Amino acid sequence: MAVDVALDGASGHEKAMITRYDVVVLDRDLPGMPGDELCREIAAAGGLSRVLMLTASDSVDDKVAGLALGADDYLTKPFAYVELVARVRALGRRATPATPTTMRAGELELDPAKRLVSRSGTAIELTRKEFGVLEVLMGAGGAVVSSEELLERVWDENADPFTTTVRVTMMTLRKKLGEPGMINTVVGSGYRMPAAS
Image (cartoon, rainbow, N blue to C red; front, side, top):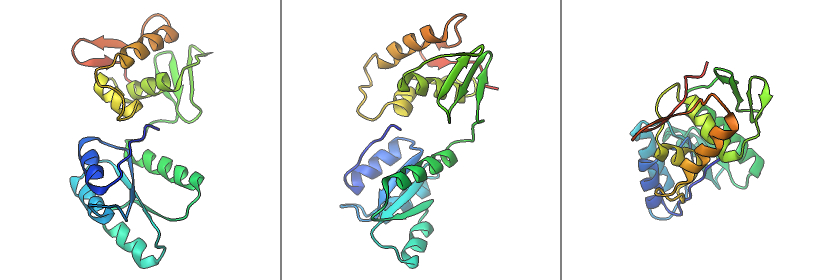
């Protein structure tokens, strides 16, 4: 997961309005803009982001109030880290259009759950970033994906937008996928792969 952190409500609001996050983990007790207000703003924006509210209060009324503000899930403190991760993953699956359990583009097969990639039945070892780039490209359904979107979806907010990271990762990914090439460069726009089947 690529994670951005906001330490107060105002910076959280700014990030949530600029970047389309799959999941926003939101503390109700944020300094500055309260978490309740931020949740309301995210829900009103009508995006695909799912909101997981965190709070120290475990009363039913507080849970109902949080869900009424537009939160998709509610977790009380203290919580087990593994439960937080499981809930974030579950909400993440609901934030984006459902993808098949296995994606295929020609002879290339990608299994997101098992983190496996193969071409013509031969396994291909990829780094996490290479896998993430390939998953985004295959999930785009043949649409062009810009370098900026890849930085946003696979890296985090600290990635330098002027870096050659995407280009270098693309070069190594193309090499690992072999010939004939499956990732096309659309000059001035980004990258495209055949629509996954």
